[in-house]
Length: 211
Image (cartoon, rainbow, N blue to C red):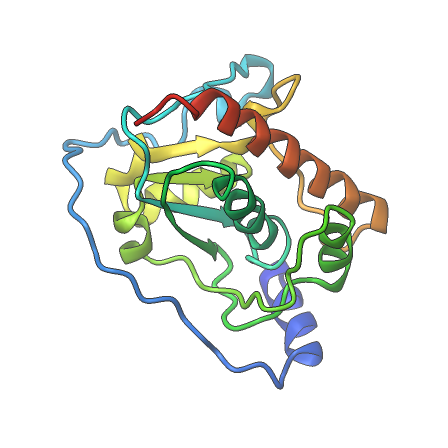
């Protein structure tokens, strides 16, 4: 049994009573053309060559998309943080999330729900959404957690390359990824929750002057 099958089996046994509630969004057209044949930049597959890229959009994003593997830990929590920080501004953004493993309609991991609660955040209503081309096309900024998510996005929709933002690059110091806590001890979930909060707080601080 491969990793994908083990993860799906894990959640099928625990959340069989959860209905699938996919997100529907309007597809937007992106101007990027002639994408490179390379799926990932050299640094993404060679950690020693890692150089952070703290990219910011030229205008405030009307739609953002958060992506991780299962959409039950990291990208389940990140939108809640973004929404909390957004409320401290006068800006408006539609926020969505999705997972590259295409797990649909699952609750956030209980450990992540607990870790988020330590920051006063509630993940109880979250349900996972599979990554899709319409979601990628609709987003103005695509926040990802690791190089494997960049690979999945570009494979699905090469034109999204220029909208991808590594959340881990906004950590101090910058990192190549925010590690997946799935299957680890509770302190890994706490660490991921803190990294997500730190990265997004830093992003908002730098992006506050974008109009």
